[in-house]
Image 1: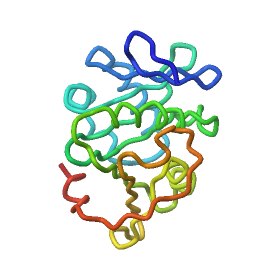
Image 2 (image 1 turned 45 degrees about the vertical axis):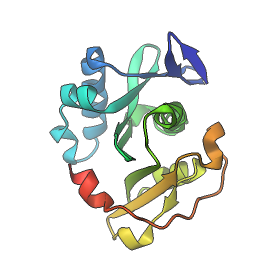
Image 3 (image 1 turned 120 degrees about the vertical axis):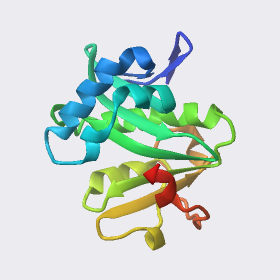
Length: 181
């Protein structure tokens, strides 16, 4: 991982990941629009300006084109509620690069003790990707359509190489309520 102009970045051949600011609204809109074109989802309900003003957002670029993003809500827990890579760029490791760049920034912020994310139950790739970064499935809070995953702050994957085994953590927070906000 590189730090350029005090902005965390990660390189994967041609991929650069940077923390987004309100000035990156058009790039975020382009990623969300491209990710939503493939399937019907709630993505169209996201307002890029609000996301950039209120949440942690990182955008991945290849050849200066935005190709993916990761978004998280902050608080005592961090809820990663969006990890998107445009369809034409999937399968090249850019989702891992987004996670690898974002987790250290989340680790350095305030009092966040754990991370949560929700994935579609049929999305094996997303589940495996988060497991590589120390997340574990929380079956008791999951259902047929959505699976919840968690990771404690300071997990051994703090090196962010994505090579660790899953972490077993008992849930203590009503995550679905936090994610609905």
